[in-house]
Image 1 (cartoon, helix red, strand yellow):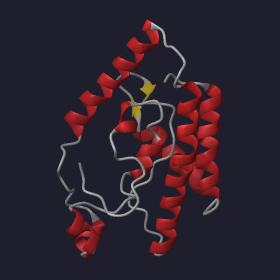
Image 2 (spheres, helix red, strand yellow):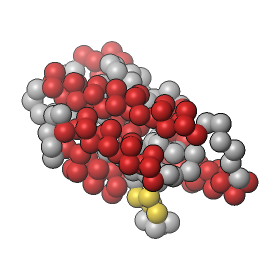
Image 3 (cartoon, one colour):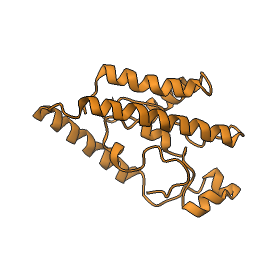
Image 4 (cartoon, one colour):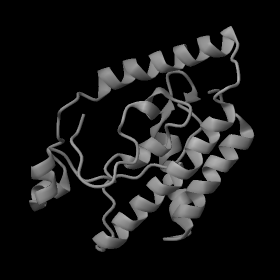
Length: 172
């Protein structure tokens, strides 16, 4: 898929509606964080069409935090398949395919260089608190990186099975 303004607006609208149910400031705060986190300064370009990003959500109300993460996952699972279905039978040009491969290749190099897999960060607050889900699953609860999935529209990270997982997950 290549960026499409109508799809981008629908995607961000779904995220905004999910965020607004919990706090009207969430969408702008987490969108800004996403825009900064997924910006490639050495290429002067963003990765994908954006989305939202949050890390270590801890409002002191775990049920509400989980409900927020779940609402985002449900919003994603509603809007993203609709966007894909709209375009899945459309042919693409050789130029669009080349752009897709080039962008995916850039992301793969960044991931392998910057984020070693199978490594729990030592500063993980839940691990220090002794959260049983961290120890049992080998990684933090969803919410740790689930929102980065929301940024993945248009990128190769969408189909790797890590999208909006609900509940404990192993870090891959």
